[in-house]
Every structure is written in C-alpha cells, then in structure tokens.
Image 1: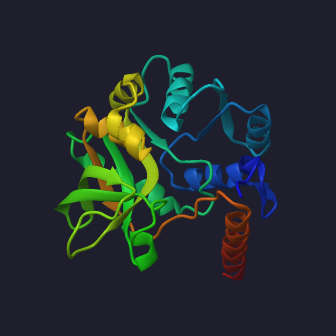
Image 2: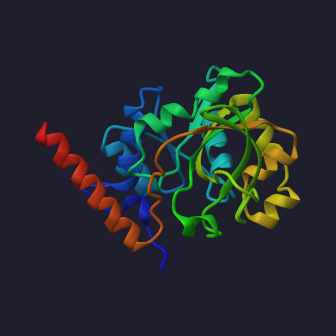
Image 3: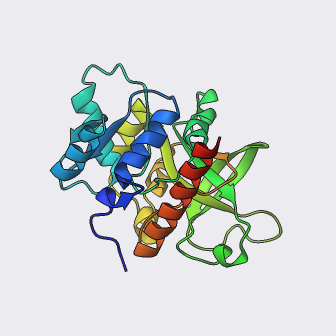
Length: 237
C-alpha cells in the first residue's frame, strides 16, 4: 500500500518534508530549498521558516525538478554544486548529507552519491534494494560502474546498497537533464544509469547506515518511532 500525500504526513508534530529540510539545514552545507509542484507543501515549508520553489507538475524526475528550481533561483550561475535530498528521507543523518560531497575532492567526478555495505542476506536478492557495482578508489569510496536491481557483482565480497541521494556539479546536472532516457535506465528503471551510459563519472562515498525511505504506512510509523526516540534522547542530555 502506497502512502498518499506523504510529504505532509505528520511526524512528531511536523510534516515529513519539514523534517527533511531540518536535516538538510543541520548538515551546514548551505541554502536549503524545497522544490515542489504542490502549493500545500510549499505553504507548509514556508510556515516552518524554510524556502520553497514552485516547479512544473510534469517533471519525470527529481533531477529535472531541482534543475528548474536552480535556474529560477540562480539564473546567473553562482551556485556551483547542488545536493538533491529526497523528500521521503526524514531520518537521514546530517553527516550523511555532508558525506555526499566528499567525492568532489576529485575534479573528474561529475555526480556524487552514497552507498552502504549490505548486511542482511534478504536484501542481497531484493530487487527493491538497488545495488551499486563499483571499483574501490579508497577505503571509503567507490567509482560506480553500474547500478542494478539484480544481485551483483557475482562472487565473494561485499555488496553495496545504493542510497538515492545525489550531489551534482552544476554543469553535470545541466547535461544530465538534457539527455534522453537511456536503454539501461529504461530496463532497470534507474535514472542514474543515464549518466553512466553518457560517460559521466559517478563516485559513491561509503556510509554506515541506510536512511529510512517512507513509502508505506508501515514506513511512516517506523519513522515516527525513530524520530520520537531521537527527540527523547536529545531532551535527556
């Protein structure tokens, strides 16, 4: 069962999208803007002191939406880097948001993302858990060679769960949204393959935990429990 109207779902007294904005602000990376095609979401975000940018309703991906917002908010191109945090990750750690920028130490990297080593056997064969197949460039970083819903790579060794949080160099985002959907993207239903098929470089920083993506009523209840526990521990200090 999917979750209708989930950006506005209440978690600990605030809409889910506001929690995501708060985690993003806590990362300390810079200006936080919620890009949305919903007036209700924009109103909720602004009511809690955050910026919102209205975008078209017909975008096929979050990348298209954030690029429209970027062009409207920064038409002169002063912003060089954009981090796209999905609006259904209310429990994401600010440290993970910061970590996604680490691969940009290498000027050859176009897009940066995150992954975590899979520890649960069931996730290794679950097609809803996207795997990143990558070549190590350091103890904490992989150069992405492929993304797949299959169990890969074959053989002994770790498997990595891709976390759908991205940082883009501005020029890379502009190029990416100009590209048509690619054959492997269509087949795997994974947008990031469009970039790889076009020869763009994606590196992934390895982090220690997977943020909870809220897609179902059960996920929402779990997010409420996590954030209630987190708030309780903060108050106990």
